[in-house]
Image (cartoon, rainbow, N blue to C red):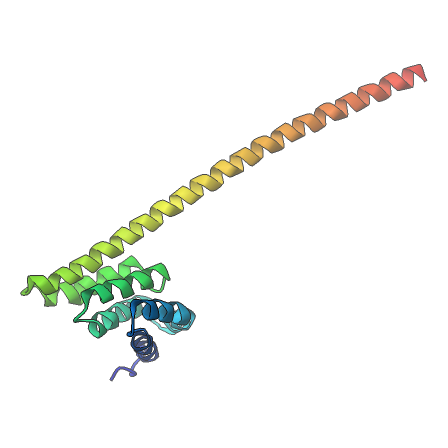
Length: 172
């Protein structure tokens, strides 16, 4: 049964979230976002995090089997909320989605589409991370240059003060 085993509570929660969000795409998005912390806690409690990711993707694919675009939308939200990673989607696709549907090109295309989307999202996230790191590094370099300029100015001011005090001591 769905609630059995180490992934049982996670599966029950995910099915409840999918059912709660089945009214419309907005309901689905809101339900996933609202219950993401609970799902995240259940994933953390699982002994096999990769198995948990595969289970989430598999449940979404089964729940919305007649609606491949909804499956893609759920997987997209799961990736965006970092509840699953691209590796989980790849493992699910290679283990179950693609091999079981090879006799039906239409059904197989859904697995390939999910796989393509997950990898594309992962690459975009990596590029965004590299861009942010580059921006932080350039900002740090700019701050370092400003600190160096301020340090140079402070040193010149100190030298001028010392010189002024020397001259004041000679004349006074």
